[in-house]
Length: 152
Image 1: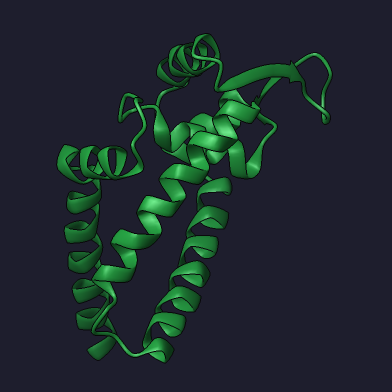
Image 2: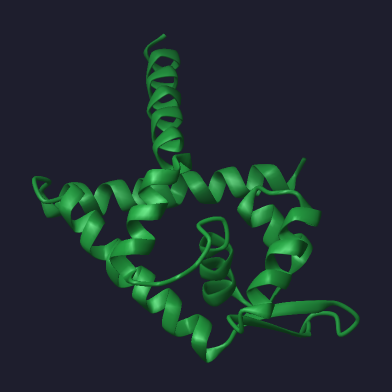
Protein backbone atom coordinates (compact mmCIF):
# COMPACT_ATOMS: atom_id res chain seq x y z
CA UNK A 1 0.00 0.00 0.00
CA UNK A 2 2.85 2.39 0.80
CA UNK A 3 4.29 1.94 -2.71
CA UNK A 4 1.04 3.17 -4.29
CA UNK A 5 1.20 6.30 -2.16
CA UNK A 6 4.91 6.80 -2.91
CA UNK A 7 4.29 6.45 -6.64
CA UNK A 8 1.39 8.91 -6.46
CA UNK A 9 3.60 11.37 -4.57
CA UNK A 10 6.39 10.88 -7.11
CA UNK A 11 3.97 11.44 -9.98
CA UNK A 12 2.73 14.66 -8.38
CA UNK A 13 6.30 15.89 -7.94
CA UNK A 14 7.11 15.04 -11.57
CA UNK A 15 3.98 16.84 -12.77
CA UNK A 16 4.96 19.91 -10.74
CA UNK A 17 8.50 19.78 -12.11
CA UNK A 18 7.26 19.30 -15.67
CA UNK A 19 5.01 22.32 -15.22
CA UNK A 20 7.97 24.41 -14.08
CA UNK A 21 10.14 23.20 -16.95
CA UNK A 22 7.42 23.88 -19.53
CA UNK A 23 6.82 27.47 -18.44
CA UNK A 24 8.32 30.08 -20.75
CA UNK A 25 9.79 32.20 -17.93
CA UNK A 26 12.61 29.79 -16.91
CA UNK A 27 13.68 29.37 -20.53
CA UNK A 28 13.60 33.11 -21.10
CA UNK A 29 15.63 33.67 -17.91
CA UNK A 30 18.18 31.06 -18.99
CA UNK A 31 18.56 32.59 -22.45
CA UNK A 32 18.95 36.05 -20.93
CA UNK A 33 21.49 34.83 -18.36
CA UNK A 34 23.47 33.14 -21.15
CA UNK A 35 23.45 36.31 -23.21
CA UNK A 36 22.36 34.50 -26.36
CA UNK A 37 19.74 35.33 -28.96
CA UNK A 38 17.76 32.17 -29.61
CA UNK A 39 14.09 31.23 -29.70
CA UNK A 40 13.34 29.31 -26.52
CA UNK A 41 11.77 26.45 -28.48
CA UNK A 42 15.07 25.84 -30.27
CA UNK A 43 17.62 25.61 -27.48
CA UNK A 44 16.53 22.21 -26.08
CA UNK A 45 16.96 20.77 -29.58
CA UNK A 46 20.34 22.44 -30.02
CA UNK A 47 21.48 21.06 -26.66
CA UNK A 48 20.40 17.50 -27.55
CA UNK A 49 22.09 17.71 -30.94
CA UNK A 50 25.28 19.04 -29.39
CA UNK A 51 25.37 16.31 -26.74
CA UNK A 52 24.10 13.30 -28.65
CA UNK A 53 24.66 14.19 -32.29
CA UNK A 54 24.69 13.29 -34.99
CA UNK A 55 20.94 12.82 -34.63
CA UNK A 56 18.32 12.12 -37.25
CA UNK A 57 15.08 14.06 -37.07
CA UNK A 58 13.01 11.05 -35.99
CA UNK A 59 15.36 10.23 -33.12
CA UNK A 60 15.58 13.88 -32.08
CA UNK A 61 11.78 14.18 -32.11
CA UNK A 62 11.50 11.11 -29.88
CA UNK A 63 14.12 12.44 -27.45
CA UNK A 64 12.43 15.84 -27.31
CA UNK A 65 8.90 14.43 -27.09
CA UNK A 66 7.84 16.54 -30.06
CA UNK A 67 6.20 15.93 -33.41
CA UNK A 68 8.52 14.96 -36.27
CA UNK A 69 7.33 17.74 -38.58
CA UNK A 70 7.76 20.39 -35.89
CA UNK A 71 11.28 19.19 -35.11
CA UNK A 72 12.13 19.11 -38.81
CA UNK A 73 11.13 22.79 -39.16
CA UNK A 74 12.99 23.72 -35.98
CA UNK A 75 16.19 21.97 -37.09
CA UNK A 76 15.92 23.78 -40.43
CA UNK A 77 15.77 27.03 -38.46
CA UNK A 78 18.83 26.03 -36.39
CA UNK A 79 20.60 25.20 -39.65
CA UNK A 80 19.68 28.59 -41.17
CA UNK A 81 21.13 30.25 -38.06
CA UNK A 82 24.40 28.38 -38.56
CA UNK A 83 24.05 26.48 -35.28
CA UNK A 84 23.71 22.99 -36.78
CA UNK A 85 24.47 21.31 -40.05
CA UNK A 86 23.09 18.17 -41.60
CA UNK A 87 25.43 15.39 -42.59
CA UNK A 88 24.97 11.78 -43.71
CA UNK A 89 24.15 9.63 -40.70
CA UNK A 90 27.00 7.35 -39.62
CA UNK A 91 24.42 4.59 -39.03
CA UNK A 92 22.59 5.00 -42.35
CA UNK A 93 24.08 7.21 -45.06
CA UNK A 94 20.64 7.63 -46.66
CA UNK A 95 19.50 9.57 -43.58
CA UNK A 96 20.59 13.14 -42.86
CA UNK A 97 21.64 13.74 -39.27
CA UNK A 98 22.13 17.02 -37.43
CA UNK A 99 25.38 17.96 -35.72
CA UNK A 100 26.27 21.14 -33.89
CA UNK A 101 28.56 23.62 -35.60
CA UNK A 102 31.31 25.50 -33.78
CA UNK A 103 28.86 28.37 -33.33
CA UNK A 104 26.25 25.95 -31.97
CA UNK A 105 28.74 24.49 -29.50
CA UNK A 106 29.70 27.99 -28.36
CA UNK A 107 26.03 28.78 -27.76
CA UNK A 108 25.37 25.56 -25.83
CA UNK A 109 28.44 26.26 -23.69
CA UNK A 110 27.02 29.69 -22.78
CA UNK A 111 23.63 28.10 -22.00
CA UNK A 112 25.31 25.36 -19.92
CA UNK A 113 27.25 27.94 -17.91
CA UNK A 114 24.08 29.93 -17.19
CA UNK A 115 22.12 26.76 -16.36
CA UNK A 116 24.87 25.63 -13.99
CA UNK A 117 24.65 28.89 -12.03
CA UNK A 118 20.84 28.69 -11.83
CA UNK A 119 20.85 25.07 -10.67
CA UNK A 120 23.63 25.68 -8.16
CA UNK A 121 21.39 28.37 -6.68
CA UNK A 122 18.49 25.93 -6.43
CA UNK A 123 20.71 23.39 -4.63
CA UNK A 124 22.50 25.93 -2.43
CA UNK A 125 20.80 24.62 0.73
CA UNK A 126 21.12 20.92 -0.19
CA UNK A 127 23.76 18.57 1.10
CA UNK A 128 26.11 17.39 -1.68
CA UNK A 129 25.25 13.73 -1.04
CA UNK A 130 21.54 14.53 -1.51
CA UNK A 131 22.27 16.11 -4.90
CA UNK A 132 24.34 13.07 -5.91
CA UNK A 133 21.57 10.70 -4.81
CA UNK A 134 18.90 12.69 -6.64
CA UNK A 135 21.02 12.68 -9.78
CA UNK A 136 21.65 8.94 -9.57
CA UNK A 137 18.00 8.09 -8.98
CA UNK A 138 16.68 10.44 -11.67
CA UNK A 139 19.13 8.97 -14.19
CA UNK A 140 18.01 5.46 -13.25
CA UNK A 141 14.34 6.44 -13.58
CA UNK A 142 14.92 8.26 -16.89
CA UNK A 143 16.81 5.28 -18.33
CA UNK A 144 14.02 2.89 -17.32
CA UNK A 145 11.37 5.23 -18.72
CA UNK A 146 13.25 5.55 -22.03
CA UNK A 147 13.63 1.80 -22.26
CA UNK A 148 9.90 1.33 -21.57
CA UNK A 149 8.92 3.82 -24.31
CA UNK A 150 11.14 2.00 -26.81
CA UNK A 151 9.12 -1.15 -26.18
CA UNK A 152 5.81 0.52 -27.03
